[in-house]
Image (cartoon, rainbow over all chains, first blue to last red; front, side, top):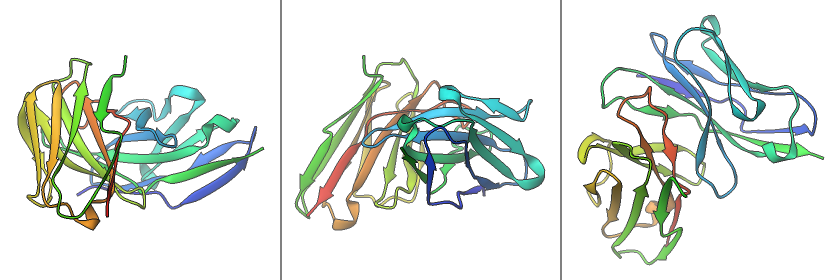
Length: 115
Length: 114
């Protein structure tokens, strides 16, 4: 079964600084990988996803993520954060090809922005 | 033009009561989901329906019963509410089933059982 780990519970970065959120997954083959963002009091919004092909994936809001098979990682990056990026970020992994396959979410990383 | 909407947004109730949460999507999607997010923000799937048929049913107490009257609606009824049911419940939808489909989430229903 697949699993996903987000090692950082809470990260604080200064506005304008670069950001990297870590995500490690466990699965025997190449899984489907996702990053979602949850703003306070809101539902989740998809930032980007990786299925195959180019291992550097561009998403919305200036985010990107890189799939590294050798490290079983799918870290999320942004070159310069804005105060509006403060939110909870979830990495997720999906595996399998049946209609009953499901996405497993990590425990989330809360991002705070220092003015 | 809310894509996935849930009602109510907040629900405060006593232990032992029965309550329902409604979800509607206007995206024309075939597949809908219920997720539970606990106090530690851990998000876990509960159920999934495709074209009104149940396709995912996780290990959820049978006090929880989903109902899909049509493709655009997926409701969640909870009997005999317990303190541990306090959580945020998210509805989501996707074009079709399978992990390759992007899921669109509703704003959540915050349930507090006293």
